[in-house]
Image (cartoon, rainbow over all chains, first blue to last red; front, side, top):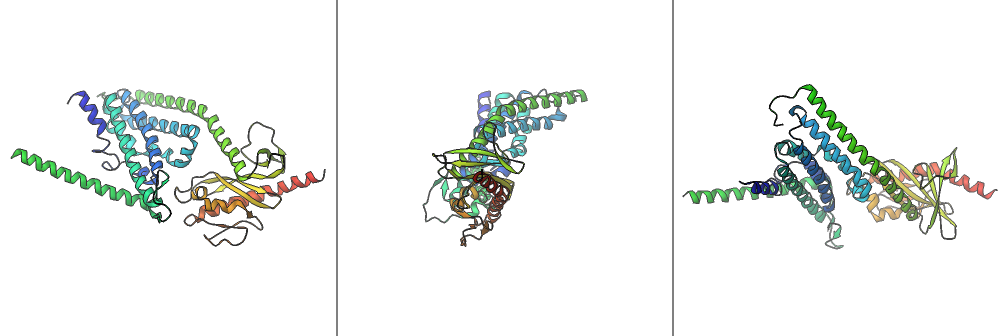
Length: 213
Length: 212
């Protein structure tokens, strides 16, 4: 595989094949907590993307300077700095978005998706791959959050991105925007993802069998 | 991480010190840059809210609490604490007061401002400035227009009471939000606390004005 192909595959994997929420089951806390509407999912995804990209860039650039024994501490310092920068900037520039997300911005620090990517990827790979990996994971994470948030908003509030869909006659399932709705939605999506993966594996195994024969 | 030999303690301390120093530098820079903007945003939100909770208001004057008396605020902009705002119409006629108040909600402190009309002794508007209530439930104290409308003509004697959804009868009762009773009650409590603190001061200020 040449460099171009590797860069492409490292970038694209986070969206579907190794989607952080649906496949790796990482970052579930924000995926459950802030996804009661599509727009909240999008804003949370954006903030996480900023932190993930920034941290991956720094960790990848300095990976040879950070001694192994203190790597986790160093990663956390880098991540926490980016989170605080995001928190303050949102408060200063987009106060309405910050009002929506509240405490969840500060909690990006403990999103295991971000630390996980530093430990598993950025600290072992060259700069362009680290950027590709972070960008792919960030897009995949945002996609998952918007999907969960969109489904919950449609069922629980009868709207999508704040636009009313069904008119007055629709009786919203209030439970879908409450915490249990997050678990229900994510659970159903995980079943679907697992099924798709299974049937795809079966098909490729069949094809491989045919070719062998 | 590609270094095979283990780094000595000096190297470890140096790495963390440099990382900590760089992080501190970035944070201080960002904080210094954003702090005035954040304060501006809060003041702008408060300013805009004064005109919404006292309908028809065009100008406002800030009064600070000093020695248990209301005195005109001399500083620049808006005082953020321990102050009330008198709101006037185009002709300088007093319409009412914007009274900020805060207290514990379901999750964290709720900060709000409400409009008070001394002539009719009623509350004429309410707006939540800051809260971390549960998204989708407790945050209806901001988003549920039916709940906010409770505060458009609300009697305050003997005190404001939150009642079960849809059972509002007396003029001093507020329909709670179903599913967010605690947040609804918190808002009512915060308003009662604000009344207790500021209404005597406002009444005193009016009396002294009438007897020059």
